[in-house]
Image 1: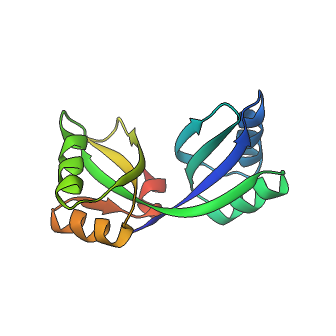
Image 2: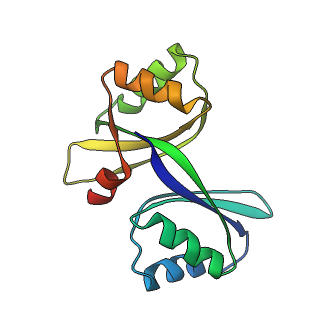
Length: 143
């Protein structure tokens, strides 16, 4: 139950994020979730989109450095303690969270947590054994 995510490396300068979203919009690519992390010189934009390969190709053609990685999407009740319950299981299984971000669909009672763990296979097994629902890319794009 892995989800493909693209990571875009961008200079920390005005207009770069707008350029990325313009390219995606022109190609009819829908962004379902995103996260931006930055340093003084550059940023990493992580995106879950409905057309991964087209997004990757289009952004590369636009001069951006783009990679593709796998993440796990864990669905939890949108209530106090949802994130804590997943992190408790991860801690007990000695899984390291490399990064995470989340999104909420207000027409649902659930939130979706996106994780990159140090051991993805173990994380998938542990989360499923603990009763968490893992979503695939198609399910995320239909939310």
